[in-house]
Image 1: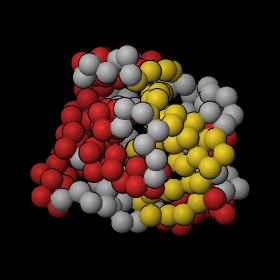
Image 2: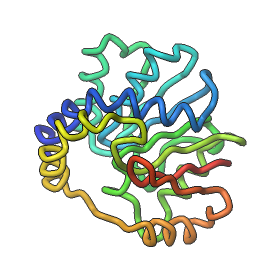
Image 3: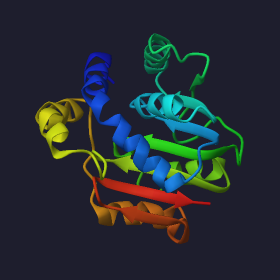
Length: 199
């Protein structure tokens, strides 16, 4: 993954992250607990969560070591390296124990989700009982259209360069079904295509 393009797209989304953080917290419904944000687009949402909800214990994980180094620098630059732990982990074999997190966030998930649903099952595995995962892509349901319009063209171009996979709702439902999580998952289409998984 090209770090220059990744950094640019993450910087572009700085004004969007507060709205995505608020949407995730609306679904989660608590201001405490253990949180994991997964993937190379991590950091933006959890920085917002750390500032707004100091009772959350937050970990960020990515599978590319260059991305891990980049995320450590970004989080350190925000003065939050003592509040947010950054780890390396494969995405389809998460390096965390079962039932460890109350909330898992994975923005940009459709770059990585596999057709067999293994990654979705891994996320479910590391959720605590009654834990919640907020997974998918999109600008978020309450993000002002003006902010979206400001970044949409450049964001689309950068995401394509980074290897974005476009998936349909039907394909996502198939992944959920293959992961055996149909009864634990609902699809939210307002502001993108999001999976909300409840354990």
